[in-house]
Each structure stands twice: as C-alpha cells, then as structure tokens.
Image 1 (cartoon, rainbow, N blue to C red):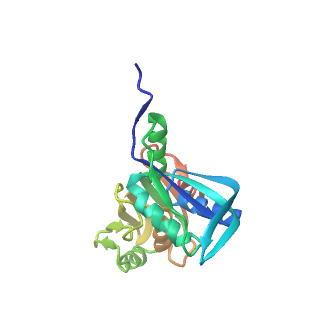
Image 2 (cartoon, one colour):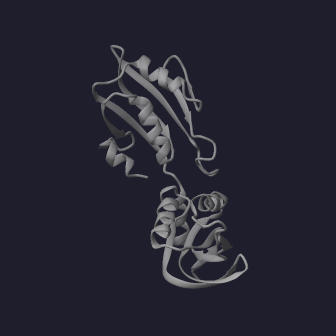
Image 3 (cartoon, rainbow, N blue to C red):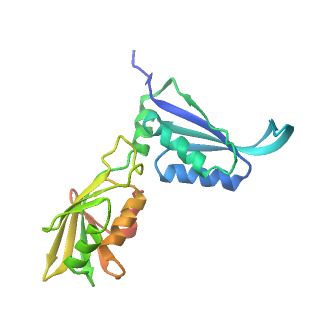
Amino acid sequence: MKKETILTPVWQIASTVSQQTEAEMLASQLIALRLAACVQIQAPIQSYYRWKGLTQNESEWKLTIKTHVSVLDRCIAKIEELHPYEIPEIIAQPIERVSGKYLAWLIEQITIPAFHIRIQFDGNPPTFEEVYDRLSKKPNVFVELDGSFVWRASKGVLHDAEASQLDGMLYDRADRMEYVEIKGRCDKQTWIDFVTTLVGEGDSAMRVQDISSGQWFSFEAFAGRW
C-alpha cells in the first residue's frame, strides 16, 4: 500500500489580535522572513476572557501559523516582538502527521534559497578601493587584499538549518569595479545591506546574472526571490 502520510516536524501556532490590519501585518512579516510557510486569518471571532479582574468580551482575528520545528523558536520570538498585545496568545502544537508533498513544500518555503551570481557594473562604477574600504568596515565581513571576501549575516538573522554567509570576489578593470561574483544565501535585509555597501552613495547601474543558467536579471527582478 502506498504511504500517504509520514511523521513530520511541522508545528502550528495559534494567535489572536484585535484588528484585521494587525493580523495581516503579522502574517506578511512571518512569510517575508520565512519563519512560516502559511498563515491563515480567520474572520472575526468572539473572545471571552478575564483581564485585570474583569470579564472581557471582544471581537478578535485569529491567526493559524504553519511552520517547521527548525524555525519554531524564532517564529515565536518574532510574534512576541511584533504583537500589539501586552500578553499575546501564542499556542504552539506539533502536527503529528502530514502529507509528504505538503511537508516538502513547507520546508521549501522556510528555506532561504542559495545562489551563485555575478553582479555586473554597467555604468558609473565605484573604484575597487572604495568598495574594499566599505566592506572592510563592516563588522561581519572578512575581506582580503586581493578582493576575496566572506560576508556573514548578523547573529540570529538566519535560522540554524542554513549557511548564513556570502562568499565573493571583487573584479576590477583600470581601478574601477567591473563585476562581483558571489556564492551563498542570505535574507532580504542582508541582501539590501550588501548592495548598499557595494554602491555606497553613488548611482551605479548594475544587473545580476545567474551563473548556473547564464540568465540576466534586473536588481528588482532578482530581489523578488525574497
């Protein structure tokens, strides 16, 4: 008989907020940070509870958050950070069984994809020295005189299952940057920080090439991966 379900490390978190906009903010942030694969928002529910000695009766919006055990603690911490309540409801339960296809999809959603790319400077490139200087001043970057560097994400930005760094090499021509080759993975904020460090206060024209496929992307299109 074909197996339809397998044991899984999938967890489900329940929480409530008082406004639809608050629910949508929490949902979008958890998805954007890849701390959840899916967040379902239920239409207003009526909640009865005791608060500071008085029985309360309020309409609330319920969130059902699907996540993976590898990011569970960070997911809960982010909910606590963003939640508007003084004492938010955060109830996490393991899901005993789930379909194999759903589990594979969920893991894919919380995993930040790796890439191997080339960032090409097409116009108004900075000098090699300018980029080297900016990189060397970053506390999480190790850069060599030949232009090779390792950019490590700030502690806690990425979850433990991922290689939280970018390995790269600066290439210049006539002292001006020609391109940068990078391998690794990072979250969206780290990517923005990296690009900002590359260009500084200039307005360099750049594009991105996927090394494996040879396909070129605009910066906006490539950033859509997050």
